[in-house]
Image (cartoon, rainbow, N blue to C red; front, side, top):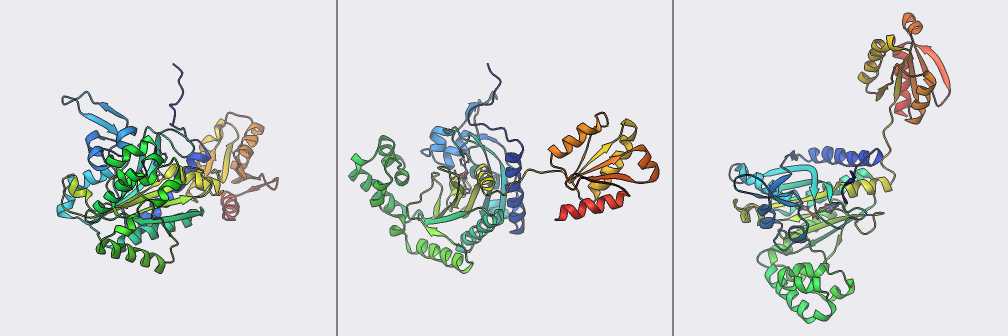
Length: 418
Ligand code: HAM
C-alpha cells in the first residue's frame, strides 16, 4: 500500500492554502457586517437526514455520499456531510429555534464530501462557506443575500456573472413538472439513459441533460408556470437588485440539483475556471423546515465553493503568498533571549516577524531571508546589544546600519505600508 493521498482529496500548501483562507476571511468579515451569526455543526450525520432533505433522487444522495455503518448499538448508518444545509436545518429544529426564536441569520464553514469524478474545481473533499436565513419569506431577504454575494465577489476582485431564476413553489410547480414529463416523453429519442431515468424520478433535472444542450432549448420554462405570488416575489427580487445596481442575468433554464428549493434559485459563475465555474449557488427553500419535522418556517441560503473561489482568486492574481515583513537573526545562542524580545516588539507593532535559528551561519540565514521574501533582516549581536542598537539590513537596497530598535521598527513599518 502506498501512503499517498486519495483521489479527489487535496493537500493545500502555500499560496493555495492562502487563497482559501483569504476567501474565508473576506466572507466572514462581510457576512458579519450583514449581522449573520456563526453556527458550527457536525461533519457526520445520519444518512437519513440527507435522503429526507437533499432528495432521494438527487445525485448527491443517490451516488455521491460517503456512508458507513457506525459500530454503535443501533448500527446507525451515517454519512460524511455532502452539504451543510440539512445539518443546519436539523440543528435549528433540534434547538427549538423554529418555535422560540424563528428569525435566524446563520453562516457556517468547513469541509464537505462528495464521491464525484475529480477534475479541476471538483474534489471529493471540498470546502463551503454557507449561509442559511430562517423566518424571512419576503423578497427583500433574497435581494439582500444576492447584494451581499455581489459585494463579496467585488471585494475579491474576481470577474463574475450572477444568474437567477424562479422555480415556483408547491402550488405552481406540479404543473411545471407535468409539462416537463410530457416534454421528456415527446423527446425520448433525443435524450440519453440518464435523462430517461429523470423523466419519472426527477423531471426538473431534465433541464440539466448534458448530451446535447440544444435539446433542452424547447423544454418548458418554470417562469411560464409561476403562480401570482411566485411571480410577484420574483419581480420584487429583480427590482431590488436593479435598485441596488447589482448586475444579474435571468437564466430560465437553471434548476438546482437538490430537491428542497422553491422560488428563487441562483448561481454565480467566475471566469478562468473551465467546466466547474459555479463558485456560489443557492436559493429559497420555504418548505424544508416543515418537511424535516419543524414548524412552517421559510428559509433561504447559499454556499460559496471555497476551493473554486480560491482558484478564481488565484487566476485573477489576487492571492499573493505571505511574506514576513522582517526576520530576526540572533548572532549566537547567547543572543536568543534578546532576539526574542526584539521579535516580540516587532510583532506588537503589527509586523509579521520570523525568528531565525541561532545555530546557523549568518550567510545561510541571509540567503534564507531573501528566499522567503523578507525585505528586512535585523541582526541582534552582543556588541550592538551593549550599545542599545540592532543592525538593520535592507535586502532590497543592500544597505546596513546600526539603529535603535524603535528606529528599526519605524523603517520596517514605513516600508510595509507602501
Ligand atoms: P451546491 O450547488 O451543491 O449547493 O454546492 C454549492 C457550491 O459548492 C457549488 O456551487 C460549488 O462551488 C461547490 N461545490 C459543490 N460540489 C463541489 C465539489 N465536488 N468540489 C468543489 N466544489 C464543489 C449546496 O451545497 C447547497 N447546500 C447550497 C445552499 C445553501 N442552498 C441553500 N442553502
